[in-house]
Image (spheres, one colour):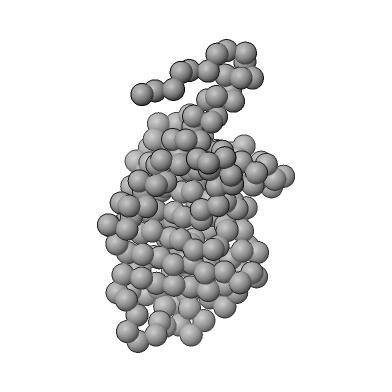
Length: 200
């Protein structure tokens, strides 16, 4: 089922429409926009940003339970011109609704890479970060759920800065690589095949 188009397209200069007061304070940094739940429309700004994706989505998310955002992600997964990389925390991905969402993904298509695991130190992967088109970096305390976006006290900040996106991407790629290796080791253990020796 196609995602409903956001009420307004993503426009950096018009993001004040998602603030409760319909504007940012005077003197706000030009490359930063911050929103707070439950006051501001976090769901709206995330929907608009994801729908605007032209080239890539790189995501590392602890809580992933927003059907509308997932629908947009799946549309991008099916688009051969968009690269999608997703890293999800294993403990959160085991929830009933989360498992239902995961079943619809297309990890086997070219340009898609999906990993589920834990942190490189064996703990939860608690990041809540997405990078869109290598320019916009979204971070903060907000899990992708309607409760997290609309009811809980949460913060969500978007940076319009390619340097921050590049630095963040390096960390997300490292985490994603570790999760892929965890999944490979688990699959090898389940099949009884010896795990591949570590490289290096």
